[in-house]
Length: 191
Image 1 (spheres, rainbow, N blue to C red):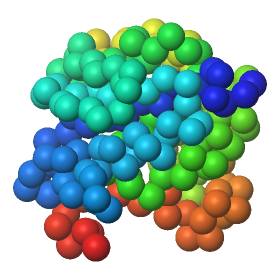
Image 2: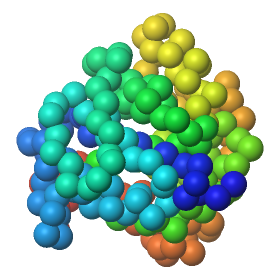
Image 3: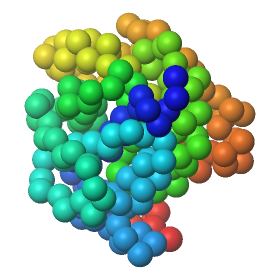
C-alpha cells in the first residue's frame, strides 16, 4: 500500500474544548490556526482529507470535505464514525485538531505498518493513543454498533478487531520524544 494513494486523513474538530475555553481548531498556530496546521501535516501522506465538525468551518486548503457527526454527543468515537462513513478509502488516519506536532512521515509509517490490519495505534507506557491511529473502513459496522449501544470508549473497539500496536521506539525515528502524540488541552499547553 502506498499511503498517498490509499489513505484518507480524518481530523476531528468537533470537541467542546471545555478546558481550553474556546474552539481549539481556530486557535492561532504558527501563522495560521491549529486545524490548518494539522491538515497541512496530513496532506503529504493522504490522498483525501476530511474534517469532522458540527459547526461551519472555512478551510483554506482545496478539496477538503467537512462532515458532521451522525451520532451527536458521543465524543471522538462519533467523529470516527462520521469520518469512516464519508471516506472512500479503506485506510484512514484519524487525528484530533489539537495535535499540531503531527508528522506526515509518521502518518505514512503508521499506514504502512497498519496495512492488512483493522487498526494501527500507538501503545506507549501502557496507554493507547486512539486519536493518532489508522482505522480500516471495515471497523465502521462495529463502531456504529458501539454507538447504538451507548459505548463511547474508542479502546473498547480494539478487542473486536485485528490491531497492530505501534511502539514508542518505532515512532522515535520521527521524534525522539514522540511529540506527534501531544495535544493541546488548556491554555497552559500553548507555547
